[in-house]
Image (cartoon, rainbow, N blue to C red; front, side, top):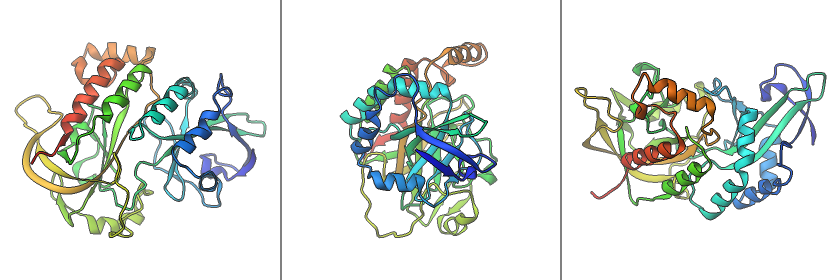
Amino acid sequence: MAANVRARELGVQTEQNFRVGGEREGNFERIRDCRGTLRKLFKVDAADYMLSLCGDQALRELSSPGKSGSFFYLTSNDQYMIKTMKKAEVKIFLKMLRAYYNHVRSFENTLVTKFFGLHCVKLAGANQKKVRFVIMGNLFCSDHFIHRRFDLKGSSLGRTTDKPQTEIDEYTILKDLDLNFIFRLQKHCRQVDKDCDFLEQENIMDYSLLVGVHFRDKRVIMTEGSFDSDSSRGSSPHLSPHLSRGDTDPNRMCTIRLGSNMPTKAELTVRRTDCEPQLIGEPTGEFYDVILYFGIIDILQDYDISKKLEHAYKSFQYDPTSISAVDPKQYSRRFKDFVYKAFQEDNI
């Protein structure tokens, strides 16, 4: 469909005419029906979906581009996230689309990213550049404020935030070696096994478990000092765009499901300093009541030649088991081992 779109909403500096449509590369037209079926499978209302993406409200850009160079945008209702994609990512997505559809249809509680649409925007003027983008569910679309965010891979090399402790806030993406909790779930679920098996079969690696933590306590002790959740909520409008709506109604009952709105206990951990870096620290017996949100993201990187070369190069310099770039089978096994250490069944 043709549309006039404000260029700033799409990361373009000038007002232009765009033509927006479905991605038509390769055999996508043959499996185009999967997109509409996926939205039905995820119980997405077609009118609400179109209004969220094409309504009068501008999209919100999320800070700077990610490590991959992709840009991220949120719809005004926080429900959908838009990510620009490289052509190689589009090809991977199209290749795995039918297998992805079969997986999410078979496992209602899957933790893998929910994809709702794949599109491209093409400048209608002399500049024929295409911008490809995918529509995904926003994992942190919640009535609970997200106080801490973790991107977890199960590897250790370079897996710490580059921010000093004093600059870490609720929008900082922390990594494996920053994780200072073990989450005690009320009931263990082995869905991660099924999701990782699917990704391994599709030759996918370098994915992450994105975790959002809402602390129910008024004040909680973080790695150093104290963190006042009330004051953080008060200052949030002056920070970067939200990935959660804030605690608008603390008495509201939200649906609890795997990876969303899960009440649990977080046990504080400390890492020993007299040995090699520990992915999971030693439990302290100090607990906090939290609500968890988590899911598997970045599932469009296959083990291609660039990743194989990265693995070979870094293996000469570092412990091969510590680097992120490993083959899908090893990646899956390491990822599952880490997740089941960080998320344990509460037997206390």
